[in-house]
Amino acid sequence: MTTTTTVRKRAATGALLGLALGDALGFPTEFNDVPSILAKCGPWREMELIRPAIVSDDTQMTLALGRGLRTAMDRGLLGPKRLARPVREEFVEWYRSPENNRAPGRTCLTACALLQGDDRPWQEASQIGSKGCGANMRVAPIGLAPGLDDEQRAGAAQLQSALTHGHPTALAASDLTAHAVRLLAQGAEPTGLVGLLRSYALDNRTRYHERWLGDLWTRGHDPSALHFIARGWDECLAVLDRLQDAVRAGSRETDPCLATGAGWIAEEALATGLLCFLLFVDEPVTALRRAACSSGDSDSIACLTGAFAGAHLGADAWPAAWADRIEYRDELLELGALWDA
Image (tube, rainbow, N blue to C red; front, side, top):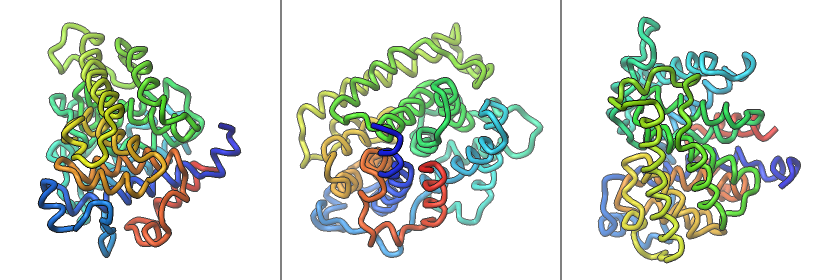
């Protein structure tokens, strides 16, 4: 797909709006099983966006990362030090905000508390044992920002994860999520997406981005940096196999979490978000509804589904009646317009 076509579909705007809409649709159903969701919301294909369309910490942290990334790129060539400082500051600002009352994850709260002040390296704040989905549900801006090369995009995706979630699977899943968003924004065909992600994972399986991550690996009790990062990629490769099987099975009416996991952990959130997107490639709203009507971490799954669908189809994928009333709409559109330009 040409650059002109990519701009015309406004992939960044579509991805950010889709992420927030999925988040808002799935936020009220998080922690519920499917029968409870159906009892509360009615048939899943008719689920409606709540009024007001309030989002969770998933969108808040996506915007925090987006602001930090914008600041870093405004200052020059993106590198680890240039990215880490403003993103760290934005995460701490989110942590201190009175609006941080949307059931945030424990890992993010613990790490952001430790990130306050400049008296410790960020690696000391990183929760090395956590591979919760809080790292990759917010990573879409890294996949959308223009002008980054492959090393910058991968390093930035893993670094933003490591500020809070230092487990190698969180790093790999964040890298894969950003890569998937980028591929779709650039026009990759969804039918070949899982294969492209598998190839990317295999190519990067033993690549530790030391320039971006520093000595993070030494905190994981692994014999080497390569062993550390390979653990994460291997878990992602395993879930991509499950995803491929689920896509082939094509079961649209069953809880997607039964096939690829409940999404509380990073690799499962990626796979289940992708599954909902791939089952309904040309029906983005239905994809969001399927993700929101799931037994797992429904807001994070749906926000990832929305990011993938929006990156693929662009801003016009979403009903104006929904997009016009999503919380943080103006900031989402501002970032989207910046990166679409």
